[in-house]
Amino acid sequence: MTTWAEARHVEHLIVGAGFAGLCAAIKLQEDGETDFLVVEKGSDVGGTWRDNTYPGAACDVPSQLYSFSFAPNPEWTSSFSPQPEIQAYIRRTAERSGVLDRFVFDTALEDAAWDESTQRWTSRTSAGTVVSRTLVVGAGGLSEPRLPDIAGIDDFGGELFHSARWDHDVDLAGKRIAVIGTGASAIQIIPELQKVAGHVDVYQRTAPYVIPRNDRTYTRVERALFKKAPALQKAYRTGIYWSKELLVPGFTFEPRMAMPAKQLALANLRKGVSDPDLRARLTPTFEIGCKRILISNAYYPAIASDNVELVTDRIERITPTGVVTADGVERPVDVVVVATGFFTTELPIAQRIHGQGGATLADTWREDGMAAHKGTTVHGFPNLFMIVGPNTGLGHSSMVFVIESQVEYIRSAVRTLRHGKHAAVSPKASAQRRWNDRLQRRMKRTVWTRGGCASWYLDEHGKNTVLWPRTTVSFRRSLAEFDVTEYDVTAPVTAGTTEGISA
Image (cartoon, rainbow, N blue to C red; front, side, top):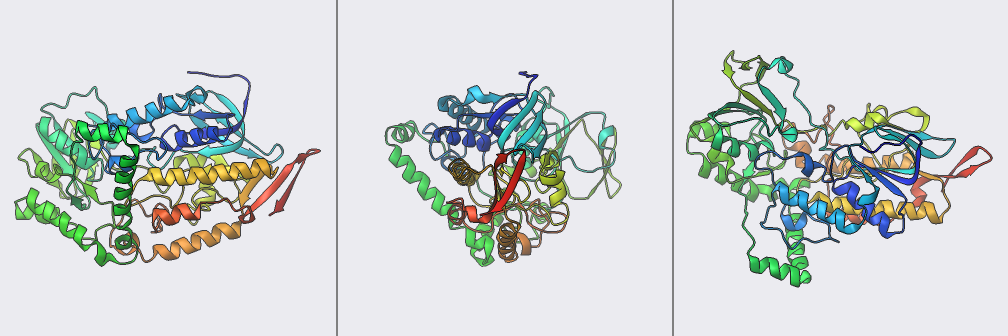
């Protein structure tokens, strides 16, 4: 691991080397902002796609949308790309862009604090201290696995691991395996485990909607055409993009428009599960879209297999040898796979970022939940830019589109800092409040709020601080320009003082 004794001084410190951090690095470099450093706690680029290597890992967004617009990939082998292909794409894009010489791996951000006297961020990392003008956080909401709060989980005597930290050294052949959770990762894992395990117990809290996976392999001719005629691939991508945008009304204000998707999911269930009792337990009791809609052709047949049992009773505790449910039954297992998601509404990194006055992001968000201006900047945290920040998530399309939109906003902000000779910018409290009040008013009409479910989109107060309640077109339009009048700007330090002004 690279370390340094003296503090490193750069213009921009970027945290994370997934899609978000890589995009920021590439686009800043395009603007001539080459004095940056990217710190990544993992050993390679990729972020989520580096970490999630579980059996069956694949994207549930069409491959054509799951790439940078400026770096199309004509080599996707299928409609929905498997994890190794996505990771290879990210790595290849990083290499071709010429930014990897400023990436430092196996280096975690331990603490970052805004220094009013220098108007700089001072960040402590596991490799050393970095002083920077801006702090760009691309860690994302799917970087820190969340383990369930189950009594006895630390006492289990067999193998136990989170789906995002898959232990490939564990031999699963013939084993009794418990899978806790039935979300996006679990429905990819369970069919793969069913093939090799002696028995699989699937612990379901709420049944998800699962629609068919309309997947197919691209032919060699198609891939050759995409390579030789980029405009053709772009047109194909554009068609897929707009088909996804058409789904937004069904999520945001007219649930009846989502009825075809609901019928498709229920037909998928009927096709995959013939037993009426099992089918009843797999039928969701909330509106489609309230929780993430999942896609799979293999999940329901796997659940209906002889060596799989669906358990819907609440887990009471985990013993050294098994899992005990609320009905008192203990099911012995050799391996426990935890597929219970991530910290999405309480980002762990928020505890390590200190703004003006020393308050952390976590402190700032504790009372009313996560909030930012345009999902990117936060009042009281000058020159902090978050990619995939509060209320930037999507329930219908590709996050890469959102990432590119935010990075363009950050580029505009950096140009404003550079050409306006400002030392720092922080969104006005009034501007941030207006943005979020308007956003939350829209959120009240959405299926995520009114659909009758409890999801990871909602925080402990029932507030949706994760998703964007409109189209991605409207998101990009909202972030098209950095409006400095929405910000408090600080003049450069002179004679040991700072001067804050409102634009």
